[in-house]
Image 1 (tube, helix red, strand yellow):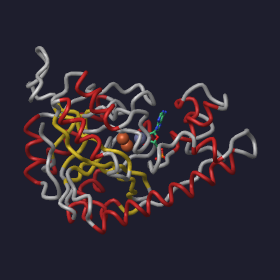
Image 2 (image 1 turned 90 degrees about the vertical axis):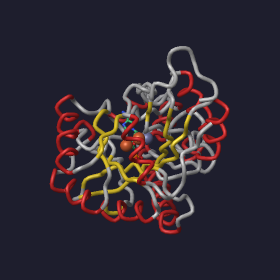
Image 3 (image 1 turned 30 degrees about the vertical axis):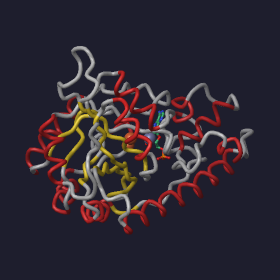
Length: 292
Ligand code: AMP
Ligand code: ZN
Ligand code: FE
Ligand code: FE
């Protein structure tokens, strides 16, 4: 560390899951790193949805703030018809297969967001320009941006209210987007030299969750870990993730899933053990951790 903070740095405080406005977080990549530094974190991973566009800015900020940056990405995929999020740490950002997959997901997210706006606009005043005004240039478009546009129009008080109503997955306005099979994405991430960890695997409050045998199949395909400590997991879900990880020989992570002001998640509210990060680094061949 080049700029240790009183009492808080150097103790291995590691948060491996955050979002910037390169996807649906509210802060820039530099602001995410600044927030990590202010919270006394030693290490932060930037894991925007389906893009690595925030990496360069985050790396520059990490050097400035004396924080270690783990470049990552959270990839939208599916398993047995269930939406799953795969965190990929340290993949080669120029891997052609990975780039093609990101392009495909982001392109279809754009189509889907426009279709949702079309449906919503039948009942609420909302235009595509309202949504576009909420999306930083080139960012991965998601329902949180639709939520921000609905809030700006006065149709919801915050993202959470929009998600509980107009944007809910059971709502008549909801449209799904393309996502690849998680097993193929696990193999793709490994092929790109990255280390795949399943985000919030048993967060039932988000919808249907993956079965244990499906996690086992992903482990056989190359899955490296499960995110156990996440605010969307109830205590028994954290325990289950830990037990299953032990059974399958996977590592266990803990993270905030920080989205800036877009969610109550506080950066550093859940942490990952230093030996787990060390094993992720050893397994990765795609790109390196940025050290100040
Ligand atoms: P999408 O991937 O476009 O379907 O949108 C899902 C994303 O919205 C998740 O990855 C979260 O980042 C975010 N999200 C889900 N529920 C909420 C909520 N209640 N409030 C704010 N953001 C949410
Ligand atoms: Zn998100
Ligand atoms: Fe997620
Ligand atoms: Fe996330």
